[in-house]
Length: 425
Image 1 (cartoon, rainbow, N blue to C red):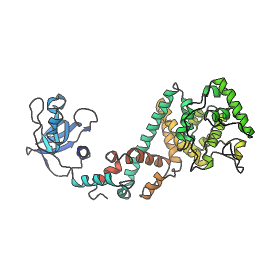
Image 2 (cartoon, rainbow, N blue to C red; image 1 turned 180 degrees about the horizontal axis):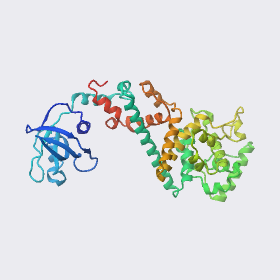
Image 3 (cartoon, helix red, strand yellow; image 1 turned 90 degrees about the vertical axis):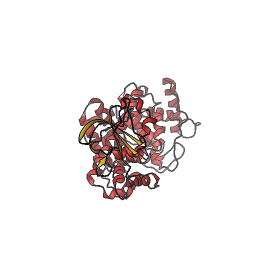
């Protein structure tokens, strides 16, 4: 539980009463210091007044004061500037390398903090802190969601940068892979990303004016043209075209990728998404540049407008015909592409260029769009948390995945409010 004692010190959750060293000297904590996550004392540059004298230095925290010796701090000069040793149990005086006794403060973890933390760790409910949510001030909620939103955008920007590094620092290629992943809409996201990594874009560019050839490359590389010839003329012609292009550019279909179809609406089948993406690629040369210049979400939606070609009006796969229906990219799908592709790219590119305006535009786009409708968002709304837009829903997805799922309650603002509550509610 040493981490909980760290938390108690860092957030000043100890009782508001007069404190004393184990030698009986009065202690006033002016500044708990800066938490150190590397080697060395736990908190740097603390300000502690002991018996009326102000000390500036470091603070070390242990459950038992004898841990000072268990960790060999008595032999490490890095700990000679520790001005206060904070412990829950005092069982042995701490002495530094100079033979000087280190002032020790015995500070038990408050029982309500211990109890609340135990409740958070053992509850099966999600989110575990649901009882505190309705009582939180709007400013607290808003500030934390804003921080989570920025954290999520930064993580996505890092992934985009990693894609750029894989593709010789080419922004267009990184954009294509990211866009493709999000055309998989979660269920087939990884498969689409893997597929996109095997598309030779410079080769495809040479045939950009021919939509059928782009489709042939896209479907062929997806290993969806591997069957025998059938009475389906469109399939046979596309398969023949892919063989020619594959030989020309040295392409091979991706292997070991499982396209998912179960429990999925037919409009989300890989065939339809590939056809839509092929058409978008065909008609939108320089799409990334246009998206970066777009100033409103309406402009972005127009740029993302696409539909599968005529053959797919009566098909969801190559095998079976279906009632005629235009397979356009829906408004909901375009919104998701803005949330997961366009906004992160604007943010990543703005960060790379040092252009704060692009970063702000990315955030504005998220704030203009409706909140995503998924189980994560609905759960938080059931707890009494108002979700106003996509910026909020992205923040809550970040909260669940990076904090709730891994029980990092000690790093969460909502967890802090729960822990400090005297009744856990």
